[in-house]
Image (tube, rainbow, N blue to C red):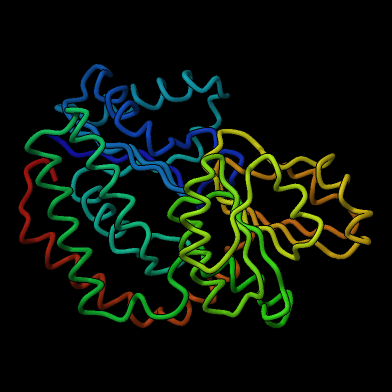
Length: 336
Protein backbone atom coordinates (compact mmCIF):
# COMPACT_ATOMS: atom_id res chain seq x y z
CA UNK A 1 0.00 0.00 0.00
CA UNK A 2 1.41 3.41 -0.99
CA UNK A 3 0.51 6.86 0.34
CA UNK A 4 -0.14 9.64 -2.19
CA UNK A 5 -1.24 13.29 -1.88
CA UNK A 6 -2.58 15.33 -4.81
CA UNK A 7 -3.35 18.97 -4.08
CA UNK A 8 -3.28 22.63 -4.92
CA UNK A 9 -2.89 25.60 -2.58
CA UNK A 10 -2.35 29.35 -2.39
CA UNK A 11 1.21 28.97 -3.68
CA UNK A 12 0.41 26.87 -6.74
CA UNK A 13 -2.99 28.19 -7.83
CA UNK A 14 -4.81 31.56 -7.80
CA UNK A 15 -8.14 31.82 -6.00
CA UNK A 16 -10.14 31.49 -9.25
CA UNK A 17 -8.64 28.02 -9.72
CA UNK A 18 -8.81 26.97 -6.06
CA UNK A 19 -12.49 27.83 -5.82
CA UNK A 20 -13.29 25.38 -8.63
CA UNK A 21 -11.97 22.51 -6.50
CA UNK A 22 -13.23 23.76 -3.12
CA UNK A 23 -15.40 21.33 -1.13
CA UNK A 24 -17.87 22.56 1.49
CA UNK A 25 -17.65 21.13 5.02
CA UNK A 26 -20.90 19.21 4.61
CA UNK A 27 -19.63 17.63 1.38
CA UNK A 28 -16.26 16.33 2.62
CA UNK A 29 -17.54 12.81 3.27
CA UNK A 30 -19.20 12.66 -0.12
CA UNK A 31 -16.01 13.90 -1.80
CA UNK A 32 -13.99 11.25 0.02
CA UNK A 33 -16.40 8.56 -1.20
CA UNK A 34 -16.01 9.82 -4.78
CA UNK A 35 -12.22 9.57 -4.52
CA UNK A 36 -12.41 6.14 -2.87
CA UNK A 37 -14.63 4.92 -5.72
CA UNK A 38 -11.91 5.53 -8.32
CA UNK A 39 -10.21 2.38 -9.52
CA UNK A 40 -7.08 1.60 -7.53
CA UNK A 41 -7.94 3.71 -4.46
CA UNK A 42 -8.18 1.70 -1.23
CA UNK A 43 -8.66 4.59 1.25
CA UNK A 44 -9.17 8.32 0.87
CA UNK A 45 -9.48 11.64 2.74
CA UNK A 46 -10.28 15.05 1.21
CA UNK A 47 -9.06 18.22 2.93
CA UNK A 48 -10.50 21.53 1.72
CA UNK A 49 -9.94 25.00 3.22
CA UNK A 50 -9.86 28.55 1.87
CA UNK A 51 -6.21 28.05 0.90
CA UNK A 52 -6.04 24.44 -0.27
CA UNK A 53 -7.78 21.33 -1.49
CA UNK A 54 -5.88 18.08 -1.03
CA UNK A 55 -6.68 14.46 -1.80
CA UNK A 56 -4.89 11.89 0.37
CA UNK A 57 -5.25 8.29 -0.67
CA UNK A 58 -3.74 4.86 -0.21
CA UNK A 59 -3.29 2.68 -3.29
CA UNK A 60 -1.44 -0.44 -4.36
CA UNK A 61 -0.04 1.37 -7.40
CA UNK A 62 0.34 4.99 -6.34
CA UNK A 63 1.64 6.46 -9.60
CA UNK A 64 -0.98 4.90 -11.85
CA UNK A 65 -3.80 5.75 -9.46
CA UNK A 66 -2.56 9.34 -9.15
CA UNK A 67 -2.81 9.85 -12.93
CA UNK A 68 -6.30 8.34 -12.90
CA UNK A 69 -7.46 10.69 -10.12
CA UNK A 70 -6.02 13.75 -11.88
CA UNK A 71 -7.85 12.87 -15.07
CA UNK A 72 -11.12 12.25 -13.18
CA UNK A 73 -10.94 15.57 -11.30
CA UNK A 74 -10.15 17.65 -14.39
CA UNK A 75 -12.91 15.95 -16.38
CA UNK A 76 -15.45 16.21 -13.55
CA UNK A 77 -14.93 19.97 -13.24
CA UNK A 78 -15.02 20.50 -17.01
CA UNK A 79 -11.60 22.17 -17.03
CA UNK A 80 -8.82 22.34 -19.56
CA UNK A 81 -6.06 19.80 -19.03
CA UNK A 82 -3.59 22.64 -18.37
CA UNK A 83 -5.11 23.03 -14.90
CA UNK A 84 -2.90 20.09 -13.92
CA UNK A 85 0.00 22.55 -13.84
CA UNK A 86 -1.43 23.86 -10.56
CA UNK A 87 -1.34 20.47 -8.82
CA UNK A 88 1.44 19.24 -6.58
CA UNK A 89 2.00 15.52 -6.18
CA UNK A 90 3.62 13.89 -3.16
CA UNK A 91 4.19 10.20 -2.62
CA UNK A 92 5.20 7.92 0.24
CA UNK A 93 7.36 9.63 2.92
CA UNK A 94 7.05 13.02 1.18
CA UNK A 95 3.25 12.81 1.43
CA UNK A 96 3.38 11.90 5.14
CA UNK A 97 5.78 14.77 5.83
CA UNK A 98 3.55 17.16 3.88
CA UNK A 99 0.50 16.19 5.96
CA UNK A 100 2.44 16.80 9.18
CA UNK A 101 3.55 20.21 7.88
CA UNK A 102 -0.04 21.08 6.98
CA UNK A 103 -1.42 20.03 10.38
CA UNK A 104 1.38 21.95 12.12
CA UNK A 105 0.61 25.16 10.22
CA UNK A 106 3.96 25.18 8.39
CA UNK A 107 2.40 25.04 4.92
CA UNK A 108 -0.19 27.77 5.55
CA UNK A 109 -0.41 31.27 4.13
CA UNK A 110 -0.11 32.46 7.73
CA UNK A 111 2.72 30.48 9.30
CA UNK A 112 1.52 28.61 12.39
CA UNK A 113 -2.18 29.36 11.83
CA UNK A 114 -4.46 27.58 14.27
CA UNK A 115 -7.54 26.85 12.11
CA UNK A 116 -5.89 24.25 9.90
CA UNK A 117 -5.47 21.74 12.73
CA UNK A 118 -9.23 21.63 13.32
CA UNK A 119 -10.01 21.70 9.60
CA UNK A 120 -7.89 18.62 8.90
CA UNK A 121 -9.45 16.88 11.89
CA UNK A 122 -12.90 17.68 10.51
CA UNK A 123 -11.92 16.32 7.07
CA UNK A 124 -10.58 13.12 8.61
CA UNK A 125 -13.72 12.69 10.73
CA UNK A 126 -15.91 13.14 7.65
CA UNK A 127 -13.93 10.47 5.77
CA UNK A 128 -14.02 8.15 8.78
CA UNK A 129 -17.80 8.49 9.03
CA UNK A 130 -18.11 7.99 5.27
CA UNK A 131 -16.23 4.71 5.60
CA UNK A 132 -13.38 5.71 3.26
CA UNK A 133 -10.50 5.21 5.71
CA UNK A 134 -8.91 2.02 6.97
CA UNK A 135 -5.95 1.06 9.11
CA UNK A 136 -3.44 2.85 6.87
CA UNK A 137 -4.93 6.37 6.77
CA UNK A 138 -6.36 6.08 10.28
CA UNK A 139 -2.90 5.57 11.69
CA UNK A 140 -1.36 8.27 9.49
CA UNK A 141 -3.85 10.99 10.37
CA UNK A 142 -3.96 10.17 14.07
CA UNK A 143 -0.16 10.29 14.21
CA UNK A 144 -0.10 13.59 12.30
CA UNK A 145 -2.40 15.17 14.90
CA UNK A 146 0.06 14.13 17.60
CA UNK A 147 2.89 15.73 15.62
CA UNK A 148 0.90 18.94 15.17
CA UNK A 149 0.20 19.16 18.88
CA UNK A 150 3.87 18.58 19.73
CA UNK A 151 5.00 21.29 17.29
CA UNK A 152 2.60 23.84 18.75
CA UNK A 153 3.47 22.91 22.33
CA UNK A 154 7.26 22.90 22.02
CA UNK A 155 7.81 25.87 19.67
CA UNK A 156 6.64 29.48 19.36
CA UNK A 157 5.25 28.99 15.85
CA UNK A 158 1.85 30.33 16.90
CA UNK A 159 3.06 33.69 18.19
CA UNK A 160 1.57 36.70 16.44
CA UNK A 161 -1.35 36.80 14.01
CA UNK A 162 -1.91 33.10 13.40
CA UNK A 163 -5.28 33.11 11.66
CA UNK A 164 -6.58 34.45 8.39
CA UNK A 165 -9.22 36.26 10.44
CA UNK A 166 -6.51 38.11 12.35
CA UNK A 167 -4.69 38.97 9.14
CA UNK A 168 -7.93 40.38 7.71
CA UNK A 169 -8.34 42.54 10.80
CA UNK A 170 -4.69 43.60 10.52
CA UNK A 171 -5.48 44.82 7.01
CA UNK A 172 -8.57 46.72 8.18
CA UNK A 173 -6.51 48.33 10.93
CA UNK A 174 -3.80 49.35 8.49
CA UNK A 175 -6.44 50.99 6.30
CA UNK A 176 -7.97 53.06 9.11
CA UNK A 177 -5.03 53.45 11.49
CA UNK A 178 -7.27 52.05 14.23
CA UNK A 179 -10.77 50.57 14.41
CA UNK A 180 -12.22 52.49 17.35
CA UNK A 181 -14.31 54.74 15.12
CA UNK A 182 -15.14 52.07 12.56
CA UNK A 183 -18.21 49.93 12.06
CA UNK A 184 -17.84 46.51 10.51
CA UNK A 185 -20.28 44.05 8.97
CA UNK A 186 -19.46 40.34 8.88
CA UNK A 187 -21.15 38.20 6.24
CA UNK A 188 -21.28 34.62 7.51
CA UNK A 189 -21.34 33.13 10.99
CA UNK A 190 -19.04 30.14 10.69
CA UNK A 191 -15.77 29.47 12.51
CA UNK A 192 -13.73 31.86 10.36
CA UNK A 193 -16.27 34.62 10.98
CA UNK A 194 -16.21 33.91 14.72
CA UNK A 195 -12.43 34.22 14.87
CA UNK A 196 -12.54 37.40 12.79
CA UNK A 197 -15.23 38.91 15.02
CA UNK A 198 -13.19 38.12 18.14
CA UNK A 199 -10.16 39.83 16.59
CA UNK A 200 -12.28 42.87 15.73
CA UNK A 201 -13.54 43.13 19.31
CA UNK A 202 -10.00 42.86 20.66
CA UNK A 203 -8.94 45.76 18.39
CA UNK A 204 -11.83 47.91 19.63
CA UNK A 205 -14.15 48.10 16.61
CA UNK A 206 -16.97 50.52 17.49
CA UNK A 207 -19.78 48.46 16.04
CA UNK A 208 -20.09 44.94 14.63
CA UNK A 209 -23.00 43.69 12.57
CA UNK A 210 -23.37 39.99 11.78
CA UNK A 211 -25.55 38.58 9.03
CA UNK A 212 -26.04 34.99 7.98
CA UNK A 213 -28.60 32.94 6.07
CA UNK A 214 -29.41 31.24 9.35
CA UNK A 215 -30.51 34.18 11.50
CA UNK A 216 -30.17 32.17 14.70
CA UNK A 217 -26.45 31.69 14.05
CA UNK A 218 -26.08 35.39 13.37
CA UNK A 219 -27.76 36.14 16.70
CA UNK A 220 -25.48 33.70 18.50
CA UNK A 221 -22.30 35.24 17.08
CA UNK A 222 -23.57 38.78 17.65
CA UNK A 223 -24.21 38.01 21.33
CA UNK A 224 -20.76 36.49 21.68
CA UNK A 225 -19.10 39.63 20.31
CA UNK A 226 -21.42 42.32 21.65
CA UNK A 227 -22.58 43.09 18.13
CA UNK A 228 -25.93 43.25 16.36
CA UNK A 229 -27.53 40.53 14.25
CA UNK A 230 -28.96 41.46 10.87
CA UNK A 231 -31.34 39.34 8.82
CA UNK A 232 -29.74 38.19 5.59
CA UNK A 233 -32.30 39.94 3.38
CA UNK A 234 -31.60 43.25 5.17
CA UNK A 235 -27.78 43.45 5.06
CA UNK A 236 -27.86 46.01 2.24
CA UNK A 237 -29.42 48.54 4.64
CA UNK A 238 -26.47 48.13 7.01
CA UNK A 239 -24.12 48.61 4.07
CA UNK A 240 -25.15 52.27 4.10
CA UNK A 241 -23.37 52.88 7.42
CA UNK A 242 -20.43 50.49 7.80
CA UNK A 243 -16.80 51.14 6.86
CA UNK A 244 -15.59 47.57 6.38
CA UNK A 245 -17.27 44.38 5.18
CA UNK A 246 -15.52 41.10 5.93
CA UNK A 247 -17.11 38.17 4.15
CA UNK A 248 -16.63 34.47 4.88
CA UNK A 249 -19.71 32.45 3.97
CA UNK A 250 -19.93 28.96 2.58
CA UNK A 251 -21.91 30.07 -0.49
CA UNK A 252 -20.97 28.32 -3.75
CA UNK A 253 -21.17 31.61 -5.68
CA UNK A 254 -20.86 35.38 -5.20
CA UNK A 255 -23.46 36.92 -2.88
CA UNK A 256 -22.40 40.58 -3.18
CA UNK A 257 -22.70 42.14 -6.62
CA UNK A 258 -21.81 45.51 -8.09
CA UNK A 259 -25.41 46.66 -8.56
CA UNK A 260 -26.18 46.09 -4.85
CA UNK A 261 -23.26 48.27 -3.79
CA UNK A 262 -24.07 50.92 -6.41
CA UNK A 263 -27.55 51.29 -4.88
CA UNK A 264 -26.22 52.49 -1.52
CA UNK A 265 -23.51 54.87 -2.77
CA UNK A 266 -25.63 58.00 -2.52
CA UNK A 267 -26.93 57.10 0.95
CA UNK A 268 -23.30 56.62 2.02
CA UNK A 269 -22.43 60.02 0.55
CA UNK A 270 -19.76 58.22 -1.47
CA UNK A 271 -17.64 57.49 1.61
CA UNK A 272 -14.87 54.89 1.11
CA UNK A 273 -15.99 51.30 1.67
CA UNK A 274 -13.59 48.39 2.14
CA UNK A 275 -14.46 44.77 1.34
CA UNK A 276 -12.23 41.95 2.59
CA UNK A 277 -13.29 38.65 1.03
CA UNK A 278 -11.78 35.67 2.85
CA UNK A 279 -14.13 33.08 1.36
CA UNK A 280 -13.34 30.42 -1.24
CA UNK A 281 -15.29 30.35 -3.50
CA UNK A 282 -15.29 34.15 -3.36
CA UNK A 283 -18.34 35.87 -1.86
CA UNK A 284 -17.82 39.22 -3.59
CA UNK A 285 -17.96 39.74 -7.34
CA UNK A 286 -14.61 41.24 -8.48
CA UNK A 287 -16.61 43.93 -10.34
CA UNK A 288 -17.43 45.46 -6.94
CA UNK A 289 -13.81 46.62 -6.74
CA UNK A 290 -14.27 48.67 -9.92
CA UNK A 291 -16.51 51.19 -8.11
CA UNK A 292 -14.57 54.41 -7.57
CA UNK A 293 -14.56 54.69 -3.78
CA UNK A 294 -14.79 50.94 -3.09
CA UNK A 295 -11.69 48.88 -2.27
CA UNK A 296 -11.83 45.10 -2.56
CA UNK A 297 -9.28 42.65 -1.18
CA UNK A 298 -9.62 38.90 -1.68
CA UNK A 299 -7.81 36.17 0.19
CA UNK A 300 -4.81 36.28 -2.14
CA UNK A 301 -4.30 39.92 -1.20
CA UNK A 302 -3.61 38.79 2.35
CA UNK A 303 -0.45 37.05 1.18
CA UNK A 304 1.66 40.16 1.82
CA UNK A 305 0.54 40.44 5.44
CA UNK A 306 0.96 36.71 5.84
CA UNK A 307 4.55 37.00 4.64
CA UNK A 308 5.24 39.57 7.35
CA UNK A 309 4.04 37.10 9.96
CA UNK A 310 6.14 34.41 8.31
CA UNK A 311 9.35 36.44 8.55
CA UNK A 312 8.77 37.03 12.26
CA UNK A 313 8.54 33.32 12.84
CA UNK A 314 11.15 32.08 10.40
CA UNK A 315 13.47 31.16 13.27
CA UNK A 316 10.93 28.62 14.51
CA UNK A 317 10.66 26.69 11.26
CA UNK A 318 13.90 24.78 11.67
CA UNK A 319 12.89 23.56 15.14
CA UNK A 320 9.42 22.54 13.90
CA UNK A 321 10.90 20.57 11.03
CA UNK A 322 13.29 18.82 13.41
CA UNK A 323 10.30 17.65 15.47
CA UNK A 324 8.42 16.47 12.36
CA UNK A 325 11.45 14.54 11.08
CA UNK A 326 11.94 12.87 14.45
CA UNK A 327 8.26 11.91 14.82
CA UNK A 328 8.01 10.62 11.23
CA UNK A 329 10.95 8.31 11.90
CA UNK A 330 9.00 6.83 14.82
CA UNK A 331 5.90 6.22 12.69
CA UNK A 332 7.55 3.65 10.41
CA UNK A 333 4.42 3.49 8.25
CA UNK A 334 4.46 0.96 5.41
CA UNK A 335 4.13 2.66 2.03
CA UNK A 336 5.90 5.82 3.23
